[in-house]
Image 1 (cartoon, each protein chain N blue to C red):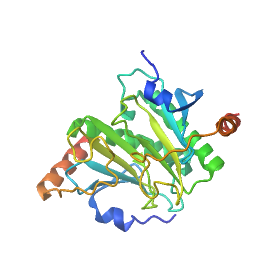
Image 2 (cartoon, each protein chain N blue to C red):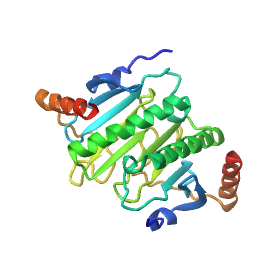
Image 3 (tube, each protein chain N blue to C red):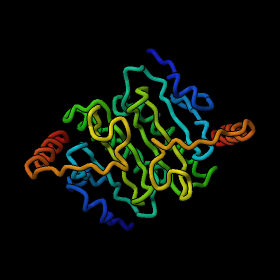
Amino acid sequence: MAFHLNERLAAGGFDFGTTGICRVLLKDNALFPWFILVPEVDESITELHQLEAADYASVCFTIRQLSGFVQSHFQPDKLNVAAIGNIVPQLHIHIVARSPGDPAWPGVVWGCSEKRNYGKEEALAIHEAYLQSLA
Amino acid sequence: MAFHLNERLAAGGFDFGTTGICRVLLKDNALFPWFILVPEVDESITELHQLEAADYASVCFTIRQLSGFVQSHFQPDKLNVAAIGNIVPQLHIHIVARSPGDPAWPGVVWGCSEKRNYGKEEALAIHEAYLQSLA
């Protein structure tokens, strides 16, 4: 199996480590709390349905778990959960907290170029809260 | 439990009936083979992770099954699988076949207004193939 985290995904945020079989990334854009799950599977797998059944179940479990954390921690009005990958082919799933008034609302965040980087403390606090949610 | 298919979702395409606990709709836009799954659950549930565990597993199974059909039938370069719901609050999951050269590539289809309706025969043929994929 060959897994190397795509450089573009890695460069865009904070690495929260691996949960289940997914690398958990927080995108460095405080305008939309935005997580990316990257299943640590062979790079030939670029679609969710191509995952083996057990891996698929594991990824679905982690999506649910992380969605619950995002909902309770950020209290957004809506979650957007999506596997797109038109540009970065490595299989990855976006979990984005959305609320009326955010810069892309009610449109989608993909294609929106507005950005505010997290302060280091801010990102650390989210990481802490995430780890506590797993405990 | 109160479930009524959202009128906007119903009006936009062809109803392929219920598979598992999901209503299966084909959006009437031949530019992108585009399915929508609507879990037939109480309307208070607007997020995937709010589904009870068994319902969540069922929806995930149907996403995988339908994705496999879309891949094999339309042979796109990419699938886009997403639960967004910023505009239509009823929980629904998009499964869209994407290829370089389609009118929105490499962007997302949400927000793209280009459209070509299916011919009746064309939609019937997709429905037939879908039913066969379940058999």
